[in-house]
Amino acid sequence: MEEQVNFIIDFVTDKMNESISHLEGELSKIRAGRANTSVLDGVMVDYYGTPTPINNMASMSTPDARTILIQPWEKPVLSDIVNAINSSNLGFNAQDTGDKIIINIPVLTEERRRDLVKRVKAEVENCKVSIRNARREANEELKKLNKEGLSDDALKIAEDKVQSITNKYISKIDSIFEAKEKDILTV
Image (tube, rainbow, N blue to C red; front, side, top):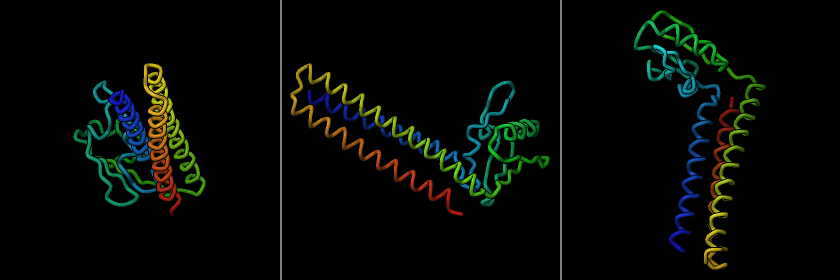
């Protein structure tokens, strides 16, 4: 029984780590006024009939805090990349210079910063829901083990351990949110 309890606790920890990783990935896409090539991760370009991420067909860099520079490996796809970026609803326009693409990141207004914080809060809340769902699943599995012969004391200890893991991850999410909020609101 103890082996099964440890398996459940390891499983819930893995699920919570996945949730945190997903949150960090989503938050990296929310730009805070500084140029970051990861904001283009979700943009797909039709490349010979296949939707392809930009970083698979061009080199991307940030020469300064307000500029993203894209150098396609093949010149014919230049206009396709520009069209994909401009139609992606990211809030900025790509400019074709003939052999590369320049994206100037506009300075964020106070209203836009508040909107970004709302998006971050929504992502954080989704992550917390995911953490709580993992806790619920673990507790359900522990209760099944209890019916199969796990003692009530062992059940209580295991549930307390799952709750302390949950609390640890919720506080980690809160600190991630505070850091991202500070990053966005800092002018």
